[in-house]
Length: 66
Image 1 (tube, one colour):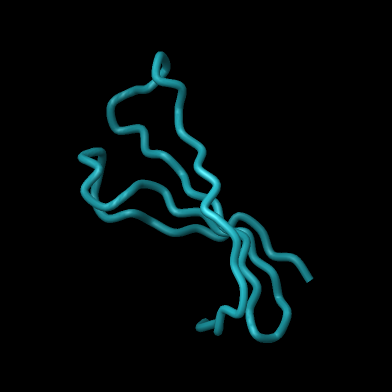
Image 2 (image 1 turned 90 degrees about the horizontal axis):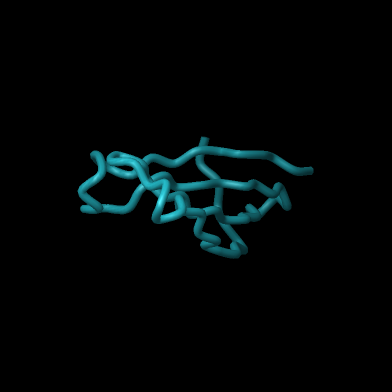
């Protein structure tokens, strides 16, 4: 489903502590997004392009509000 985004906030970055970082662990960037109908979503992107820890970053819906 396609949504027209009217507002967003982020990213808020979550990354592993450097002393616990394991090879292949990817950071997450969280975003709060609102579409043109007022629906709000909490999304995150796992990984960064060319981070050397995996392929293409993947997007996930963490939560949906109202």
